Image (cartoon, rainbow, N blue to C red; front, side):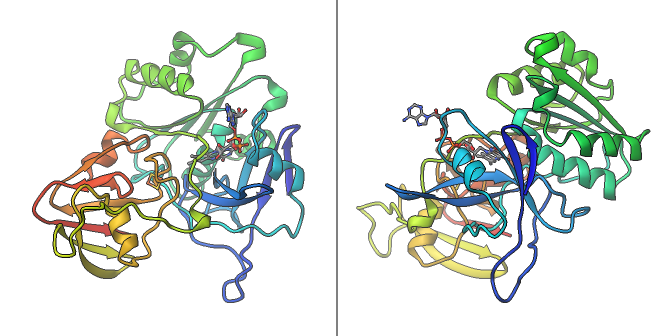
Length: 334
Ligand SMILES: Cc1cc2nc3c(=O)[nH]c(=O)nc-3n(C[C@H](O)[C@H](O)[C@H](O)COP(=O)(O)OP(=O)(O)OC[C@H]3O[C@@H](n4cnc5c(N)ncnc54)[C@H](O)[C@@H]3O)c2cc1C
Ligand code: FES
């Protein structure tokens, strides 16, 4: 357990499963969904991004910042201790660079630094492009990972540029101020995480700097409302007839399944009702845990708060929101 600031800490994790006692596989930018104990509701589920890098840290870690009047973040900050055991879903999410051969512009505000930190550390440890981090905080005292960033800036003086923006000194970030800090390289890939207003402003600054909309990726931090740890209920259409629906072929972690997706039913519900162990988290189109690649056919998504244009162009869709609209559908879940 590492105290980052007066209201944020990092929890270093290890598995307690007897067969795999240490770390686990994940990609930079992914998150875990944790089950946090709750007296009345038994538990609540919350997502926390991995702030460690799978390429330069021995053990995975998550970092949590207290949300004022929030339940889980305060429970974790108050109860975290060496030996605390919590249940978690496997790492998930699509806020993961798919290429590393472009300069990276990373923009984070407050706790939005966590997935960005993971991407930053991997980029420096295993790739050779320049990394710019623009990091907004209320004051110097609220900067998470301040020592690590200082150390990395010393170790990679020509490859890493860190610009801090302190609200206490400059007020809220402005378009002009951000534009000044964004390097003039339209070929860059950008990753942003922070409050919605911050990300909207940052996107405008990046587009003004000539960066392609397709190259701009964002991660949204919200509290998910569903609790995948309390059992996977499914919402399969009441009108569903056993032999009616769209034929679907799903390759899930290397195993192939064929089934009918009933009309007006999302693919996730159809898979769960077939007993297929498909990954999911929020079931609200927010977290990206249920992402799959569409390899044939068409689906319509009811909501999408997480996938960007780039992922959509590559055929990535959300199983919790996708209803088939073609005669057949083929999907792959890694
Ligand atoms: C993909 C993803 C990754 C994330 N990664 C991180 C991370 O790395 N680090 C991190 O700190 N957070 C992260 N988050 C956010 C995290 O999951 C939680 O949303 C955050 O910790 C707040 O949860 P909470 O239970 O403390 O607050 P909640 O109890 O969910 O409350 C959130 C806010 O809503 C208000 N509220 C609650 N109930 C009500 C009500 N009934 N009426 C009105 N207002 C209400 C509270 O006052 C509070 O301001 C991530 C979220 C996602 C989706
Ligand atoms: S389960 Fe979270 S987006 Fe589908």
